[in-house]
Amino acid sequence: MSLKLIRLAAALLALSSGVLAQEGGATGPSTLNPSYKCDPTTCVMPKCYCASSNPPGGLTPAKIPQFITLTFDDAVNSVVEPVIYNLTNYHVNPNGCPLAATFFVSTQWTDYWRVQKLYGNGHEIACHTMNHIGNPPVEEIQGSQIALNHYGGVPKNSLLGFRHPFLLYSTQSYQNLASLGTFLYDSSMVVEANTPIWPYTLDFGPAIGCVTGSCTGNFSFPGLWSIPMPNLNNPDDTINTSMDPLATATAPLTSDGILAMLKFNFLKHYNGQRTPMGLFLHATPALPTIEPQRLTAYMQFISWTQSTYPDVYWVTNQQLLAWMRNPTDTQGSLTNPALGCTIAARDPSNAEVCDGVDNKGDGNIDIGLTESCSYMDQNAYFSSCFGCPSKAPNVSDPNPSTTSTRHFIPDAGCPNAGTWDPVAGQCVNLKRKVAVAGEAPFNPPPGIQIPGISNQSSTSPSQGSKSAAASRFDFSLALALVPAAAFALLTRHA
Ligand SMILES: [Zn+2]
Image (cartoon, rainbow, N blue to C red; front, side, top):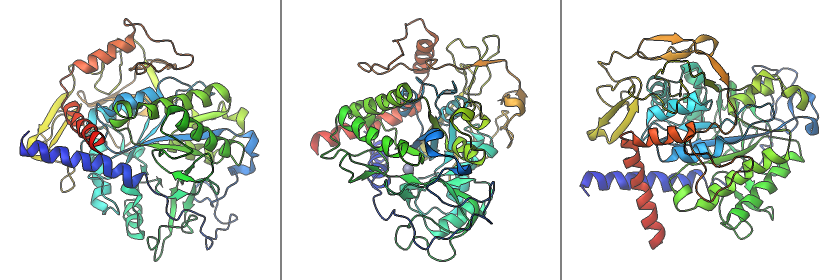
């Protein structure tokens, strides 16, 4: 192993384990802020909304949907990708739309083309800085937005969300975020499981007690939404964590133990005020390789909510806020555009466009259209529909010069749900058909049965796309295997 590779492995291991330990261990102050005051007669939708445990619109909790947000943090690459698709691709919401998740992407170690695939598959892409920096300066926030826009192919006006790395925030970091004027929400503040609240705007400061000393001075950000992160509690109602459920005495690290804890927390929300529940995860290589019981439990939990309850929706943060601004009861939510499908599978008659989507439906995604970009001196490798810039996007230059003839996506994307063709530099209106659950690019891991989903045959398009993807020369796979091996070593000796 060269010195460079050893440094890379160390950095990746520090990133993976550090994030898990710190971002996932937020059990600090999280009760409601007693000095929070907001007047609902002057703070009105859509620009202002007071924090409350009650549903918006005066609706009765038992008569509205239960929302669950599935979020993933950090880099997106080929190893985390199967984890993600296994959790999201096998179920539909009550309105027939596929589940959608939110990705808080840090751009270091990220393969931009895989971000584009997630966006093309109907998920929300949000910012998490470039280098995973807590209390981030404005350059880290803005740089990630520029890079995800240019090389992830996500329209700037869709990059609306932010999560602070390590959940480390301050008045200054919120000022940095708000100063850019393009973000709709932040989701970094943890709230106690037994005092959950709905998302609200920060016009009147934090409704949740900040980590000591972190919200000093004028903490007021009009119009910027805060989406609280409710803690998960153990089945004995002691605090577990907010992210990446921990193994504890009453929530042992078995699929049954983790599943029982998730059900316990779900029922708190469902039988209470129906405040949104969150399953906040890091899709690390550890999930399928070292702790497959976690992945099994998450998959079983999603299956359980969708097969047991006719009113549970797994939505993106943007969908959640859109529903809150146009709240409807359970019946009305079936046709509420806020919860509409964000994915449309393509019609086979379409030509392949470099947009992260299987346009023809033949199992091949962007074959022959992407380029592999390698920057040894920056330890950066990614694939891209937008050509390879002179160096990898970084915080001092998130928009490096390029000689590529590819065209960046317009800030506003394409009208009428069209797709951007970066080769021709124009919007293309593609024929569409409604996506259905089970049209997934990946199959469940061996031994995991998903209710209602039969194992797909080897001739299905799903299998085709998996082998097509696997046959690509893949820098990020090699990159991601390094921390997997390091994890394995660490576990064996720890
Ligand atoms: Zn993170």
